[in-house]
Length: 186
Ligand code: IMP
Image 1: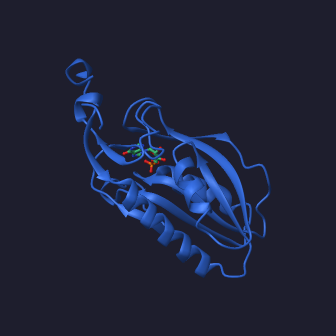
Image 2: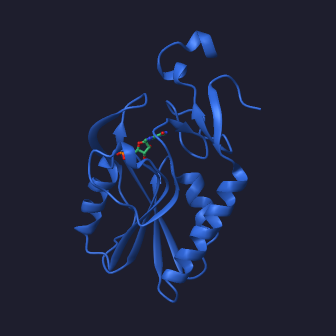
C-alpha cells in the first residue's frame, strides 16, 4: 500500500493502538486522583498525543510547545531553538511532556531543563519512540511506546522534510530518499 519511498512497515496501526492504550492506563494509574497537564511537542507528537490523551482517565489539561533541533533532512543540527512557548504557567503542576521520538536526546535534555526552571510539582517525559543507540546526551524517558533500532522512521506524526506525517503506520524510510537518489525511488 506504500510507495517505493517506504522500505518497510515497522510498527502497524494495530500495534500502535494497543501500546497507546497500555500507556494511557499506566499513566492513569500513576496519577490517580492527581490533576495532570500533558504538554504536546509540536509537530511530530500530535497524532500520538491526540490518541494518548483519550486513553487517560481523570483531570487532564493540555498545552503545546515547539522546539527544533533539525533542519531539513535526517540529522540533528545539535542546536535547539524554542519556536512556540506554552500558553499557561506550569508552577506547582504535574507535567508530562509528550514527544514523538528520543534520538540524540538533545531536544528533551534542553526542554526538560527549561521546564524544570519553572518549578512544576513533577515533570516526566513520555515518548512514543526511543532510539537509545543514537544518544549524544544522556537522557532517559519515563514512559516509552517502542524502542527501535537506528533507522529513520516516518508516519504517525513523524516526518521526512515535513512530509509523510499522515501515514497511519510507523514506516522505515528508504535510505535512497535521503541519500539523494530520489529519481530511483519516487
Ligand atoms: P533529538 O534532539 O536528537 O533527540 O531529536 C528529536 C527530534 O528529532 C524528534 O522530536 C524528531 O522530530 C526528530 N527525529 C529524530 N529521529 C527521527 C526519525 O527517525 N524520524 C523522524 N524524526 C526524527
